[in-house]
Length: 80
View 1 (tube, rainbow, N blue to C red):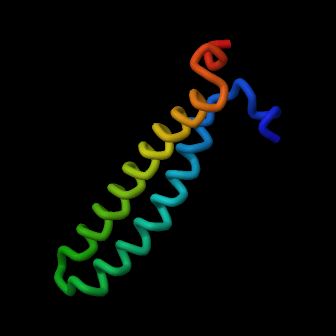
View 2: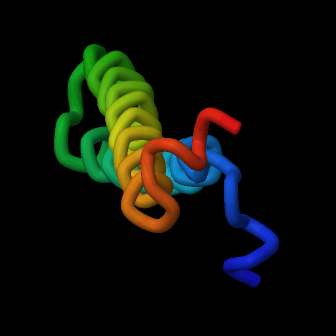
């Protein structure tokens, strides 16, 4: 399987995994925020947590995926 991925940039795969994890974790944190904060602003804070975690986890996945690509087959293989 690693030979099939050789030469491909894994940043896109990492970004997808990060976005999925961010969406799931964001929903969980959003539900917790709505449960704990019983005010009119609870939905705003929950949405902020959901979107924030989605963006942060997507960015982390993109960065880590790019680093894994460089580590596996070097900087010169990515430019082909």
